[in-house]
Length: 324
Ligand code: 13P
Image 1 (cartoon, rainbow, N blue to C red):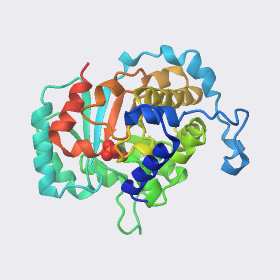
Image 2: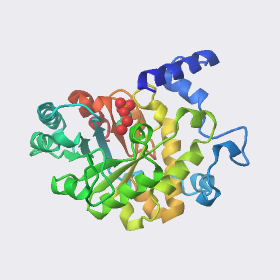
Image 3: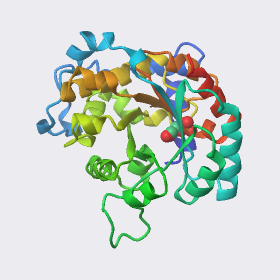
Image 4: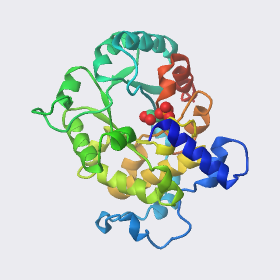
């Protein structure tokens, strides 16, 4: 369904339940708790999660030492995901305008992930600035008969540093699975690219109270086979699908809790040092108004921004919010 109809579904649900409070974020918190309350001892059979995944005891990690992990050890990363927007000439101008506004703001790493055909012109616009131009997808094969696809070595030679992998729009509209996300991630890392790996639950999963399980499963499957060294070149973006393009942002507490779950899963897989060093972004209707509150949270190390990254003033304001 389109983002608009998705949003209207959310609004209908909100209205029919007669939620208290007036703010959209407050309603989200009231209606969609992260943890299930009805079936605490296991997943409903209908969900069909494979037993073999062996989910780590995330609560144990979350409640013990994970909360003491030092946010100050991580640099904020503010990344724009332009999605399918901007022609090459528009890209050059928008990046140049953004570069002028973020000049000297070195408290955050700044990335703009643009359509493949915009990479060269965006790099021209970024010249002399600290903005790194990234891509939005990559194929897992080195080369071959994959009409319309782009390989990791092609991106590398174009000077791309970061590539987004596993965005929910790829999962939803282009049949991306955790298996292909994992393969793309491995191919990107092998070519020397850095990865922004997206995970996040859909609305129905949050309403069913299985967000924790979904995040654990995606994180584990998407990172399968990666070493702790590989992980140094991976950023994880927590993007609740219900918050993308809907104007319905996760509350700072929801974002922090979900990012903390992901960090605890990584701690279970790779140990505390790897988890402490991992940059975890929040994405989903982040804008110049809500960014500061979200970015202040212990487990939120940056943002992956869609709509607001297309407007230099808005994106620069988010970069400002990350300077603290
Ligand atoms: P919006 O910021 O437009 O909600 O998009 C978020 C996103 O999908 C970033 O990858």
